Length: 313
Image (cartoon, rainbow, N blue to C red; front, side, top):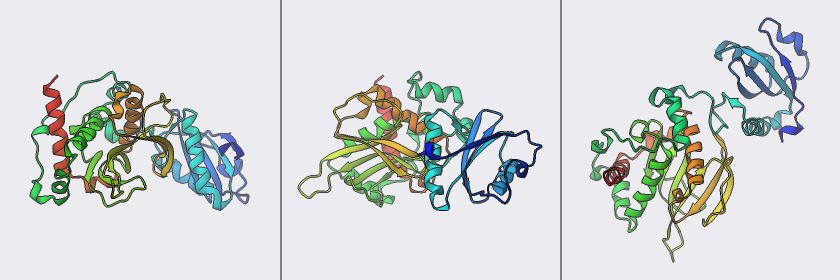
């Protein structure tokens, strides 16, 4: 836990040599926190903090006004860095870190598509509009060109799968027609495995799988259910779900809360808020590796369902 770390904090005016504050021949392997003039922070690890600090001064935007340092054994660096990031985020610090955080302080790429005021309104459910632009009319491929989508279309619960996926896109992803593929992606029958069941379809944001449709992989049953990852800091009511757990499986984001069920999770406003909160933080991280596996035909089916819903309103 970060409470075991003995951080020493130093104010920094930008002129004082760091070696005047820290002993250059002393232990410089440890965890550090940088404080910037805009109120943001950065948490990192280094085996040579003097050298790392100089790198940050050259490449980070803004001015470093203070820093904290704690000596840590080499073998404990990864674990304690992760825990320090999680603790600072829990404490409400606005972190510049992209790895290990749920919502980085700076997300300039998303801000160009979707301004910060609109992002805040989306998280708080003040903006309930379903905006698709011309996306419902765009088709990127045909079914004959995508065997996985063709296989998914033949699934006996195909309609329910599309409805589950559309629920997530509608309730958790802002301006989905603008953020598709670049910020979020959807795949059919991904090759990655799951300890919970056979993955049928998955929505990913950045490098995190945020929503999965699964089926029981026991031969005696092919029951369809879903798994959704949400912000663990949001307090949720007791719900009629199959299960709920805290997972540390995602190194890029830290802890998430995993909910399982077979009815739409968005019947609960609290779950919808927790889903939007995690999704927005991940969107602000920018494009992830999953974009290359995006299935445009499955996305077409989702947007067709969203278009159908918008016409009913």
